[in-house]
Image 1: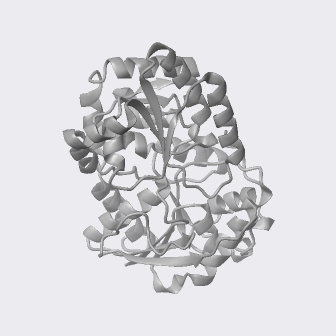
Image 2: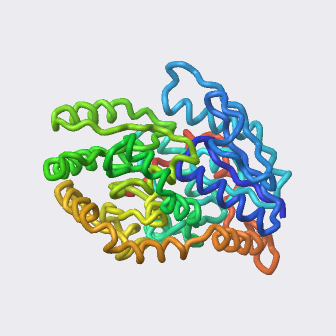
Image 3: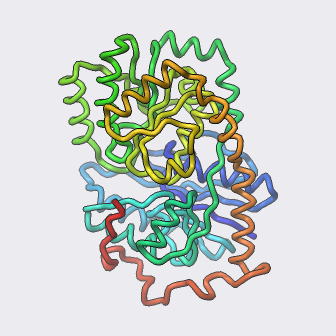
Length: 390
């Protein structure tokens, strides 16, 4: 089979990390895999090197000053659609809303379910759920949301985790010491400053925690996104000033630096309001770092008792304080959990699904689930508004 995985960005976001790791693991199984993506900001490649066994196609996508989010999303879809050659592939697998709108027939991984107020985004989100002929979710919780909200039955194939990268970092005493010399003692969060990541709640929790442990810093990593979160960032900065705290915002970091930054932390904060699996938190467990997550059904499902769960800022602060005081309390459970998830297993699960969908021992692609042609217009603006999954 010739397999195309479609992503929307070259930047280190969770869905992009997933796409590359899955492509490489399938290529290691002998699959013919090509990853397609949009090269924003002049990017000609991904944020990290990609295994030579995976073909990479980066479609140039020029930036435009003062372009709104809605028009940028629609232009992203049109740009990918114009460049992609579906006839070259037996399986086309979209990993996000943009790429699922850019092709007429595909299966899609729904990593999590968003709710958008921008009309163009709401329409595209709905189409990206209803048009694909088959669906993958990385957890039962998100598959349940699809079933309840749309009557769609998805295949559940969990993420993998690059455990060895983070295990190796945890044993690199010199590397961890260098980051602690730069950053002090710290709690780390990965994902940037944005509403879905619950960063304002983390800030409130950190202020409570800092009152008990004045030498503890908060470090925030990441933040590459298509969306304009300047207003949220301004609220974050204003609230930090009101609380008298000064988080260290690193932004995007080098891929090789991330495991050490995580491994050197006293605890990992993961207050996301929506997640499909929680890959960054699983990587922290692989590094032996205690994790505190928001108490969401999906995170209870994936992490169980390997993490501390909390919801309100005061509860998050208490859980982080306990994690810092007792870092080894759940360490073995976390390491064992992270070892359970491998990209090799994820790749085998996907390849088996592809064989079924392609008619090798199963139904032909789209034989019972592809939408009729009248539902496959290229315009997102005609789709129904997205349901509120919150």
